[in-house]
Length: 345
Image (cartoon, rainbow, N blue to C red):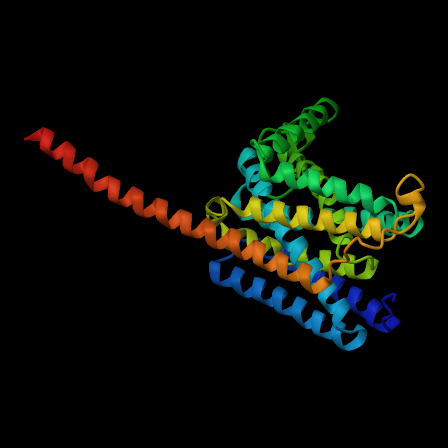
């Protein structure tokens, strides 16, 4: 059964979400600042509450199945967006972006991400509608991405280095100043108009968003084939990402096992996509072009449970390991001091 929502609900939802994003952007432009932990927490809670309210409305207008698809898709994209924050931290550090202007950089990054994901969603929906075998490709790609995520080998640093190549190419074609001029992307140096390093940051963020869109869109299409749910789940996942960046801060470094949780989710969804492709199989060289009836169909609610448990286990394990290391470092410090004191005697 296809998703059948009132047209006014779909249009109204997109209009309201767009207005919220515009208001958020105007707020940053009018008052650039470093948000406090309290401010960031309130904004994150606001956006999470908004997503849950939207899920409740989906339940009312479309039923529990589609509401579950939205929540599962939103949580998947949210977990992948948190992983995106690790790269944002590296980019901000690499280009020494003044903390006061990092909000604007993040907001531009979110807008770029929305545009790119919108394009990918439209392409993905059109391809899926015409070629059911694409689920095999999506599934295999996600399993490969999960393996890469679980055994990164400095993956985040590699991504920043790849973007460094783009930056070098950019410098060959345009004049870029050595210093920032607030949040401006254009400035005047010695009477000559030049781009500021902010343009490099925006291009780097854009390349990052493109890489993450390639990973994330197949993942959510493994949960739902509704373009409306895919797009709204992405919007809600990206809303509040800016505040989450400042709220988590140094905590990102403590989430050492997060990539394992994300890898497990991607592998699970990849296998789910392969099973779905087998269930609707039409490829002549597989089972003579017939559907593979024994292939299991994994329910939305099972997917939701796997996503929640995976992220919870990864987060709790990370915090426990971090607390254990902190205690060990605290115990080691007095021992070092004691040995130094005994040498003095």
